[in-house]
Each structure stands twice: as C-alpha cells, then as structure tokens.
Amino acid sequence: MDRRQVIKAGLAMPLALAGSARGQQPVFIADMHYHLLFIGPNPASTQPLGPNMAGGQATLVAWSLVGDLPWLAITSRGFKQKGAPKSGEPQKWLQEEIERVKAHISAQKLKIATTPEHVDAALKGDPHVVLAVEGASFVDDGIAQLQTAYDMGVRHIQLVHYTRNAIGDFQTEPPRLGGLTDLGKTVVAECNRLGILVDLAHATSEAVAQALAVSKVGMVWSHSSVTKTRKPQWTMAVAQSRQLAFEDAKAIAAKGGVVGLWALRSDVGATPEAYAERLSELADWLGEDHAAFGTDMNALAAPALTKFSDLRRVVEHWQRRGMSEVRIRKLAIENYARVLRQAMAARQV
Image (cartoon, helix red, strand yellow):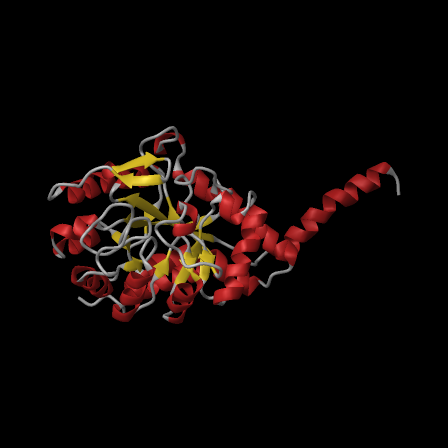
C-alpha cells in the first residue's frame, strides 16, 4: 500500500464509524448542580452558558442560584456565615438573582424547564435550564414564599446551604435543630404539592432521614460524594464533612432518588476520566438508576471538570471502556430527568 492509499484509508475510518452510528440518538448530558455567577473573576458575561452547553451536548442543566450568597464569607475552612439576613432580604435577593439568570438564559436563546414536557424535550436534545436554588432561607418568612418561587420558574430547591435558616441543620456547623424543623418538614410536603424537586445536599443525616419520611416522591442529593469509611461530622475538614454517608445514600436511592457526584479534584481525581471511574463506582454502590452528574462547577477551588465538554469526555471514556449504552444514558441524563419529571408531575393544584 503506497502513502496515498494509507492516507485515504485513514480518512475513511472515522467516516465509516460515523456512518455506523448514524441514526442513533446522541448521548445528551444533564448536570444536577451547576453554578454560573454574576460576580468574581469569571462572571456570567465572560463565560456564556449557550456555547458551554453546546460544547458538551448538555441539554438539561440545573443552574443553582446561591440563595444565601450575600451572607457568606470565604475563610480558611471554606464558606462561613458572615451575618444574618433581615426579614424579606432573602426573597429580594432571590428575585433579583432570578431576573439576572433569566436575562442571561434569554440572551443565550435557551429555554427554562418548568414542565414534564420540557424535561422530555431535553431528553430528545432540546437544551433546557432548570432554575434551582441552593439554600431556602427565603422560606423563613413563610411557606407562601415557595409558591412565589414556583411562579418565578423555580423547580429544584436545596433546603440548606452554609447559613442557618429555620428549615434544618447542615453539615458544616454544629447541629442545633435536631434535623428538620416542623417548618422544614412542611417545606418538603409543600414542594411535593407544588411540583418542585427537593434537594437534600448539605443536610445532616438526621435531616435526610426526616425528609425521606415526609416526601412522597424521590429526592436528590445533588452534589458531593459518598463515603463508606466514615460518618461525616461538622468537625472534619469541609471535603469530608460534606460527604454523604453510604447508609444515607442508600436510603435516598431506596426512595427512588438520585445522588450526584461533584468534581472536587482532591476527592474524585484530577481528570474527567478519573471522575468517570468514580461515578461508575457510585453507580455500582447505589444501582445504576441512582447516580448522576452533579458537578458543582464554578464553585470549587480545584475542580476536575470546568466545562461541559469535560463531561463529554466522561461519556466518551465510558464508551471506550465498553460500558453499556443503557447505563451510560442513565448516568448522563436519564436519572436526573426521571426524578425531576416525577417531582413536576406530582404537582397537586
């Protein structure tokens, strides 16, 4: 074979592979916990969401608004509360932040997922963004604020974060409420009624158990990792205190929920391929219906993933490794889509 024939054969190889896959739907990507802030060294204006999602074929992204951001300070031990919000301030902050987020989504010509049909469209490749809130301090002034959030388009709410609220205890401070308060339990039930997905990330083990006892639909733990070797405590380093105990992860899965893996390099490894192996292990532990991407991108000091094309590398690693297409699709998008859709569909008018 001469040089021209070698080159010709080499060019024909990828075309043949592409042809064999033609007609097969691509593996689309979901992320249960993604940040794009309007402050800091890389604000939203410098890293537009549309091209980022397109670069990884991400079609269902939960954009997490940090509900307690104005009351947080960065310390040597991570985020700490720097003050208590006055009545009405968290609601005002949430409304202003949602307006900024919606303006960016509109400018990017993306859509907001508010119904089960929107989730179905995302599964077929139509990009949608889920409005999520990390830390529901805005509910401290009354349960009616959940309806207000719903009316603004919020469909995914994380109960607690890094500041104390009236809902429940969180992992990085000494517990003082015994898990969820009565208000916290009411919030879970009201989210079920409205059709809002409940996110248990950052909550203590006691709060997780109490939420599971109340909820009538599956919930998520959107981001961190699962440990079999320790019981996370607030006295530990943040990366360890923020882990989810295996027993709690199994309980979330048993209720039909999904656990997301963050991209913290010191925890999951330095590359997308290392992250892929860790998430595959999580799926082995919990079952392939109960693990998903929950990257926490743009909120980690040293991430293994920085853009959605990195998650595309994760999928490609699984494909090269011979993971079944069924399992890949579940981990990449279907698990989050399922639990989000179920929460939306459970809405009671």
